[in-house]
Amino acid sequence: MLDGLDEEDSIEEGGQATEKKMRLSMHQVKALEKNFDVGNKLEPERKVKLAEELGLQPRQVAIWFQNRRARWKTKVLEKDYAMLKANRENEPLWKSFS
Image (cartoon, rainbow, N blue to C red; front, side, top):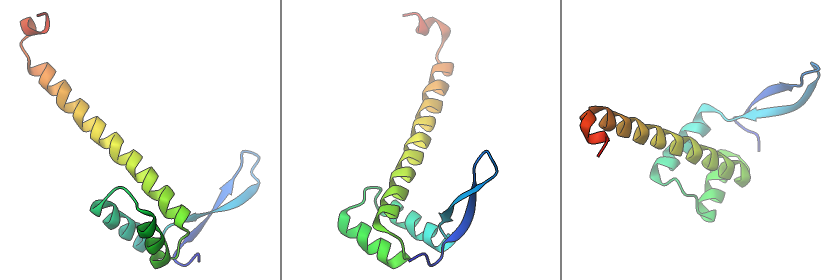
């Protein structure tokens, strides 16, 4: 089940190793990104199929999509804010007070 995953040690403040954190392989990330581009919402059937294809747990796929949607939303909001700010800066000063 953990095919294609890389292990990364987690270390607490005391310097003691705790649990292993499993990282996705590049192949898995590319496949997940490709599926996200098709649709950022994940139906249960699609989640299970994708998990089986990538050797992951369905919960891992669901969490990856949830995190990716959060990053996507942040980027959209940053882009919208930058556009609004640029439009606001290009307005004449007298228009701001009306």
